[in-house]
Image (cartoon, rainbow, N blue to C red; front, side, top):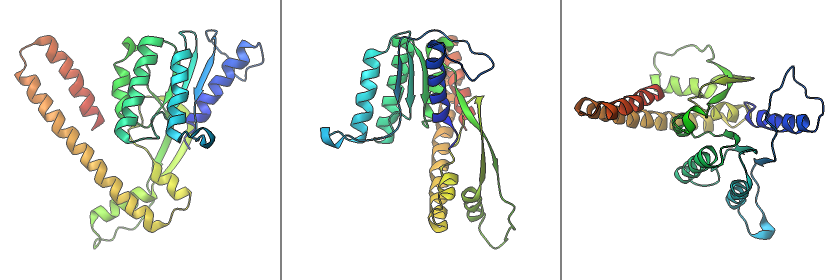
Length: 245
């Protein structure tokens, strides 16, 4: 909905048009010639070959990792979503690390795994840049009923939150996903949205609590640390953890 996939598709088409000497719909364009454009996008299975959606996904990724060179353009869209969260995030992390450190090619890597943002910032000595699709979030003007619990009001506000996608690329990481808004636009029943908002809030608070406990432990380790260099590394990690809170 935000335009991520459309953006990376446009980049691939612009590179192809520019290298063939065609007109490019841009005021200016600077690029390095590529020897190939590799893409891994969408979700589909291959029933005739007995391959599941995730098998097709990782098979295509494996072909890219074998064929890509430092001169290639690689586009990976939502890698790892066909399996469990932990396995998916681990595979996405490993593939991103490989294309940055080993292949060292120009890569556009789309993900909803927010944990990868901190990992990406430490890869490749500054060669990785995090960006997101801009949006504006606004809450509806509703009358507050003093008899209703505050948590119920917050969950209703989350379910009704209005998101306006601006279709512009901006620096930094989007620290939240807005799937509930998309579900509302798809006309998911309100009762289902209310349950989803409640569960989303529960999981969000649980993640924040774990991060807070981890930051507190890390702060204690820093205060007890006698190594200056080790303390500096831990401080950087602590600052990143606090930023995510």
